Image (tube, rainbow, N blue to C red):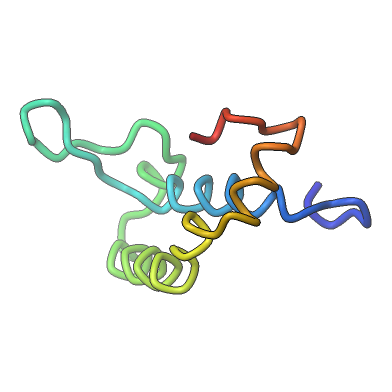
Length: 88
């Protein structure tokens, strides 16, 4: 639950990475071949809006990529006992 009064900055990076993973419809395997992303629930659901999903992912990446370099967000996620280093 990300809307409670006690939530912290430690939720930002895991939520961002989870959203980016869900919006990544294809990944490359070891041979460089694109395959459906097995970690994304949207892979099997999205048929007609793939361009929209790609645009949304690109927009989120442009707007929020800085959080992965910001020490406050990184330390907040590391020190949050629910996440620790699981998101790395």
